[in-house]
Length: 205
Image (cartoon, rainbow, N blue to C red; front, side):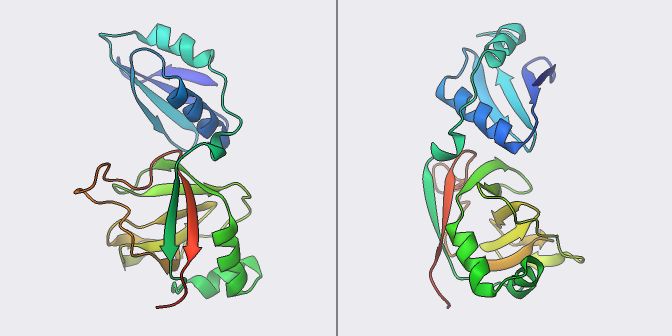
């Protein structure tokens, strides 16, 4: 663990990998140090935001360093089920890359335990990692200028759901009608760090 100041009101905690970030994030959510007002995970870092009127960076750093990461971090978040129609334009390319059938891709995707590791790219877009790993899907050579909202995609070790129409270079394997970002909902983002995601195959349209 490496802890660096990020301005005068935050600490940037550098960790080895996503699993280490998830483990520390889950522990700090359970037992938030006094004065910590926000926790923002990323692929290998965790930003800890502090209210200077309630604590200081030195005290929060000491609390973070003394925190025991949760070994069961992937098993404690709220479960969100996403109904998916697996008819994505890149599904056959993904199956060819993995050396299996389209049916096996769907079975693996629905059978994996996925966790929202962090959010970014667009409001409501969660970077999902699986407990099993082993995906390693390359991005498209040429990104699409328009990816429909609700598209389910893969890139690298991640899966994701496009919250709105946008450009994108991930491999599309399906789609969901469930809105993952809705300003009229509280909270607006359905996929939040620590949530566990279950993809459910609902057949074809």
